[in-house]
Image (cartoon, rainbow, N blue to C red; front, side):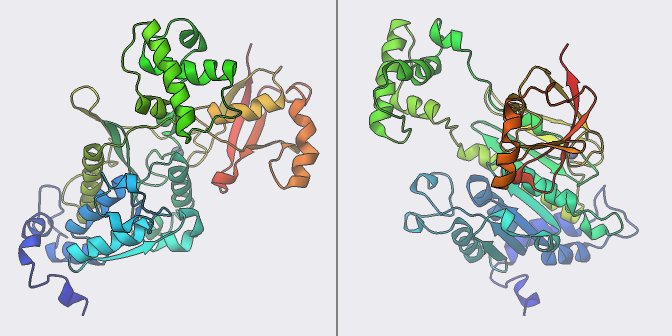
Amino acid sequence: MASAQVYPASEPARWIYLDRIRTRPGPFTNPDIFSGEQVAAAMETMKILVIGAGGLGCELLKNLALSGFKDIHVIDMDTIDISNLNRQFLFRQADVGKSKAEVAARFVEKRVKGVKITPHNCRIQDFDEDFYMQFQLVVCGLDSIEARRWINATLINMVDEEVEDSYKPLIDGGTEGFKGQARVIFPTVTSCIECQLDMHAPRAAVPLCTLASIPRQPEHCVEWAHVIAWDQEKPFPELDKDDPEHITWLYQKALARAQEFNISGVTYSLTQGVVKNIIPAIAATNSVVAAACCNEALKIASNCAPFLGLPEENYMMYSGNDSVYTYTFKHEKKDDCPVCGQLARDLTVDPAWTLRELVESFAARPEAQLKKPSLRAEGKTLYMQSPPSLEAQTRPNLEKTLTELGLEAGQEIGVTDPAFATVLFKFKLKFKP
Ligand SMILES: [Zn+2]
């Protein structure tokens, strides 16, 4: 019955052009072994996993279904919010409150006959390696760095050199306003998401002196109201970023300051955006990046053209901020990557720091970004976030300096974080002169 559904009689035209690409030999196919029929058949039985059914995910599901993939799974733990409807085009007003994965799957199945989409309304961390092992390709359309790091570490952990099927290519798309990227990771072979973590450095804060003395942009005035004026005047006991009354207070303060410095552009929605750190999602950026990701999936699955990741360039960045610019380059694998490398990474610290300062610094370090780090040195537990008994036992160490704890330059420390349970982040201490 499955084979009868492959080319529904009602829609033969839909696949004509796709089949011209995948069933004919091209300049990149090996003429000795190429079989167009086999390529098309393989794509139809191939299992592909999409992570995220939001702005990128809706585009990815639609594109993959229209590119000849027939067995697609999608994971998303979110439900549909009214604010999603301007770009997450598989959802309608009546769907508000329902599972994104389920609604998206049903919509695409209805529109593209013969495609099967299996929704999973849960977190990616709810599945184990056996689940991920069933797929041949994983495509991510996520807005969370943490989720990307988790799936990256999981797929790399799954690699067994003796088993070819254990290598799962990961295609990752991401957008931020008018900017975006598409990249392909071949676990253990090419640079991984953890190697590339510094591409997602936490946004640098505006220096306090700029806010206090010489604001130049409307955002500076909002930050001034948020950071300085609020603290001085305390109009409400605690700032609630979702309370319109609080945002209005900040907006009026920011507006007055902007007028004082002759700066235009302070609005209520800008205030809300800056305070809540909202980066606008732009529908067309999502579609550009999702299209690039989907084409990589088609190329990897059918071998109809060279794809990102092999042999060299593995990262495509797109920017629409200033006209249109794209650049594709090779991001190098790092020997000291905690996930795919072997070596400990250098960590420059001041020996006069307390352990607390060291622990807290891991959140801001672009190459680490760990919010709940637990630390061990050779033969010694420095600080553990859990279980509570161990936390209490190691807590006094937080106020000791690194010197007092007996840590020396050149010594290795191991860091773990509950968000990435399988990864041991190894660092080699270097003391600031
Ligand atoms: Zn890596």
